[in-house]
Length: 255
Image (cartoon, rainbow, N blue to C red; front, side):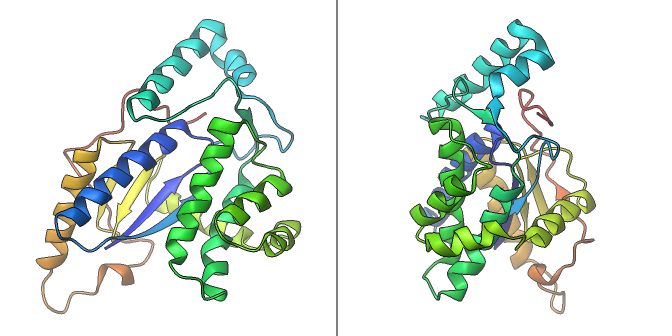
């Protein structure tokens, strides 16, 4: 099973959804299923965000007013606390995430090139490092030095990451992911696509993730002989949105 996760590192619901999904994967494995292959895909909630960071609280206050921003912050912070997560939106600094997505795309490729074990796991560690940097540490996720440090924490050579970030490597991968998101009809994140057959929109609860993963496993087992494997499907393949899921009401589609 291959699961593609469309996400942005400055999206609090993506941060929450990543942890809910991880709990579902643990339960999926505990039930005797093979651990799915996870691929992180780029999605920029605000491609026009500045490369120079600003407090995200200032941005939300301009957009929603002081009371509206406080209510939105408390709503998402409460959801994070329910997952045992720290969410310091008072520290978070809004910045452009294009280079962060380049780092995510590069991390798996670099791990494979260096013959490191579990490239997908290394990519996920890079994603987790970016979430932590933004939502906990208040770091600038558009800064090359910060990004190279996250790569090093994920197990990749800091010099290689620094060299990659100095150029435009993997910009085409980011653009390709954004284009794919458009073809699949995404309007917000997080968004999980299983074998290009089943989609899970939003930061669903672990039980919902698990139920849809189990249904996707059944769909694969029941596929008619001669059907192409799901991982051979092209970007235009139909994505079946599960009727039992819906995006969480509190999750805005855009920042």
